[in-house]
Length: 325
Image (tube, rainbow, N blue to C red; front, top):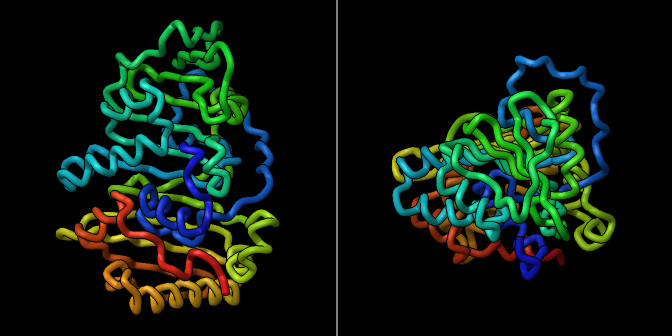
């Protein structure tokens, strides 16, 4: 991920649309402390992990992007989104680009508020049997970390956002891990999935699962009202499907209390109201919000024209997201 990108809420909003297509727009800045690793029993030899089970619990946001379905349903827009997914997934590395070109489904796990640091776990399902690390850059890990898994470790200097380890699974799946997540992923491979991991639904073009966390102290001081709302949230899940020529995003945000859910609902309604009266009106035309007890549900229909503008970065975040009075 480029260090040149701004980390202000406006840019976070746009990037959430690119990867999560808007369902988690105001929640992706949340962060917090590490989640303790669960005391999981060792894996049996016949156990086969699903892609979602490979993500350690310390990653608070996991996105699932069905590139195969996108290519079938979105036409030229699929190429735009695929390029954006590649860029956000460490596409500056040739092997990542090669794997994404063959991908059916891409899973991306990260810490939402620290996205600029580059810590991530990337899982690619597809025809990746011939995707192999360059032996000049990686060495084979022997003995294997787990049954049915081949692992390669990068040699030489490492940047924080650089792939440090690659794991392959019988030609059906390849896993790219940056340095900070190496030990956590190895633990999952040896002992099994973390209980508190994020688990986006395996449906639609895009789905996401976010554990909401407080903002860092510096951002809490800068954006106190948004920080107060985020502090009361627990989880947000979303998925996106095509309905005619529009993309429909359904999201559910769960708060700790009904009062906290009410604050989240008010924020979303304020964003919608402000957007409808601005040059971003097209973005908010088909946004519906309702609250049921501790849950806030959002249904958002985005036309193909609006979607293209979002993916190409031509539609910026609403002005209200760029700072507080």
